[in-house]
Picture 1: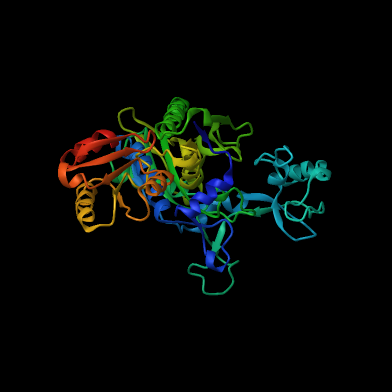
Picture 2: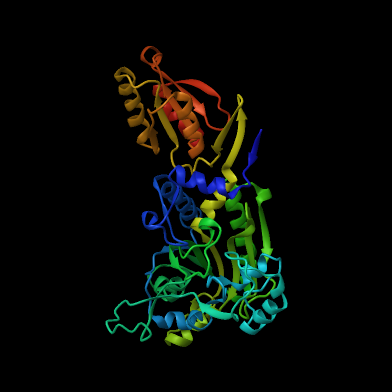
Length: 460
């Protein structure tokens, strides 16, 4: 019997041990809330992005892609509200001088500060519950007053004065602003007609006060976002369609439906019509996996006001000109990767030992097939290499010859490889190999010249 993992430490250990995720700059002690993706992690990460891009762009006729720059003029962030309002509530422990997010401290005692609260409202809530709070590092109950801390990361790009307070340039805090400012460019250079969407995958940066929950909340992260531009009268219709579409996406990835739920935003920003989050049940609780938001025309209107360029759409058939409303879907690559790892991780008792297995959807598995010669003798290595060459034309294949065949099976189980192909001494006579299924552990004998068609049925 298999059980889904509930221990976050096991996920973190597996991620490091098997080359999925490494702490950044680890040989120097690491950099908080920044991570590197290892040989298997980058494959899983790329597979997630590839599946998202196919579902969002290639499988549709109404969504196009974009890759906007990380650096943009500071006026973009002034127009979007990030310079003036993109902040988290900060407090510092007076004893150990560790800085903490106030909403996270309150959340630990099940008191929730909404992100739309003013600094004064958060301070009032903080004061009302101060006696129940303790510094997570030293245990003291002695904090500075709450202050707002802007999350934009400043840069000295093009600034040679040495004073970063003059004409600051920022690393983007989200990717969607690059979509909004390119709305007219996409409209003018394609035959896009409303309703249509613009999708983008790219890096974003936030100067997070506290790093928590492994790769769930980091200072450098990658977003998969799509902004869908619609007629104002049709906004909620398409919003409901995208909600259904995005939930189904995660189920199609193999994530268990009981580990997914909707969470409605109760306190909306003034311009939003409605906002829901798809939440996943991580080992540390229900947390946001993706947001689906009906944003109105706020974003295009703001950039019209600040740039002087009209962000309008002309419907030639109806003779109507209007500013489109936006339905946004916004997901994090790392959060999706973490959800996939948590959901796929199983421990099973097999012959009086515990088998750790990642039951990844074949679309996401870093390696689709592992080829294992039964021994290191040249007479088996040569045909095994021929099998690798045959399968590599279509699949990412691992060649594994180290340790016993049993240990190699377990190693491939732990990294989520769906199938192992064993080349043994009988192969020299019958020109067949043993194919082992990761999930069932069942084995069957398949002729080498039938492997391509066999895996085409299994993996496609």
